[in-house]
Image (cartoon, rainbow, N blue to C red; front, side):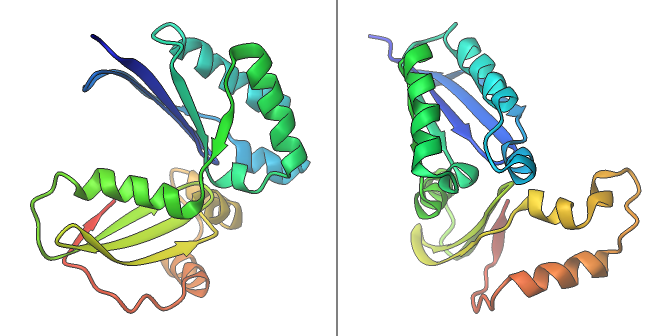
Length: 196
């Protein structure tokens, strides 16, 4: 019996969509929806961003109705009232709800997907750089040794240094590096391999 299901991961800047049939990937895409940037301007999730999400869901429904929707960084910042309103609309339109994933669970699932199939026994660091958060997971012999979570991401860095989006940025590497260094606490862990 074939089992088809979809996972939609809503990030601060990118919404990742995966449709599987058994172990085979049927559909895999990333859609830019600037939830965090627009939320910062307006103080709420914009209707136009939700409409983009609805288009993603409608595309996925061409494959299956068995859809799991997970909200990451930006959805962790929503008030309960705003999340309930969004979920009511999703339930009414598609019989779906956004499950908000903690930063810890997001990092754990991503890291597991990275190191589970790797045959490497020494120190590995998995760097998970999202639009609104960054996670570092240190693994040795497929066992988690240390983890670090940060409440900033790519959207925050490009907001501080907008020219990073240009072909030729006007900010220097040192400026960006020094700024990020103020946001990162001491890691006190090394790795032989870095997985991005």
